[in-house]
Image (cartoon, rainbow, N blue to C red; front, side, top):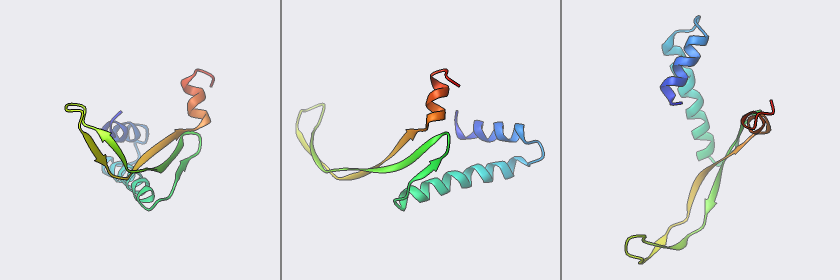
Length: 94
């Protein structure tokens, strides 16, 4: 599902809301999650999962084409851990 499909689904299920308002709500939620993660905070959505940021240390990697050693800088990457309800639904338990 892409963002526009999510907006359309929420708008269809809430006919009392204007499409532009639903779009603003969805975009605000995503922006707040992004801002929280960039500030180093964790975002937990009960029953769905938790977003956090993990730090990857600098290391020496390899260029796959040439095999040449390449220095890879330290970086921060987003990490998602699925909640119990989501895992159970995916495995047909709920």
